[in-house]
Length: 139
Image (cartoon, rainbow, N blue to C red; front, side):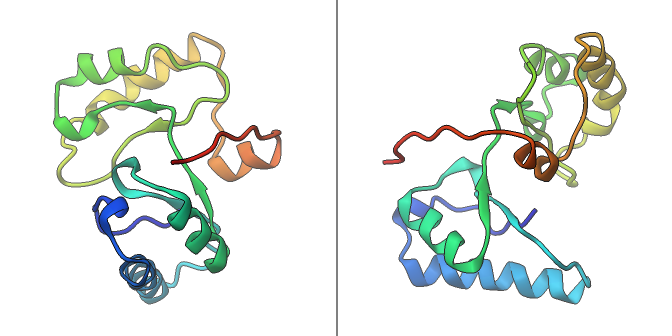
């Protein structure tokens, strides 16, 4: 999944968005990562313009339904508590970065919590290919 600079895109010009996506593409190219089809808007900010620009690049924009808030380093128990409402079809936002220092410690308990609900784990591409979509107008 493509991710890039953390900004509020509602205040950006189209060319800035295009530049940021292009920079991310270059970074992935240098890492020899190919066939990226999904884009997650940083901090969850997106609008019609970002959706259209992403479509022009061939990306599908995805968004999470549950934020673990692991990036705030609230403690393992709080990260697990933040995902307890997860249900079938939810996408949980977790971070694999130096700033989210407690995520790796929370994962065993978090996975146990989700498994206790008989939830299956799939990647976003797999979820999309096996579902139908409903839409809401983005303002």
